[in-house]
Amino acid sequence: MLRGAVAEDWMAVPVWARDLAYRLVCLRCPDDPGLLREAAADLLSVGSDWDRFAEDLTVRADRLDEPLQE
Image (tube, rainbow, N blue to C red; front, side):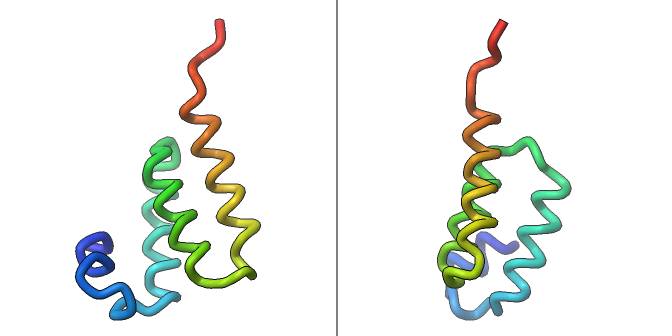
């Protein structure tokens, strides 16, 4: 639902609602690097107050994408 609403009109979904939706989805699917990056990109669009959190999400996504070391 969120992807469709944001794709249709990015400003139609309030920042607090997008933030809450991404938090819930990231809790539900914490091992989905694509989703973590999507949430990070959304946080980067909000303002510099959220950059640290976006960077943390990106680092988590990068770690998930790393091949398993034996």
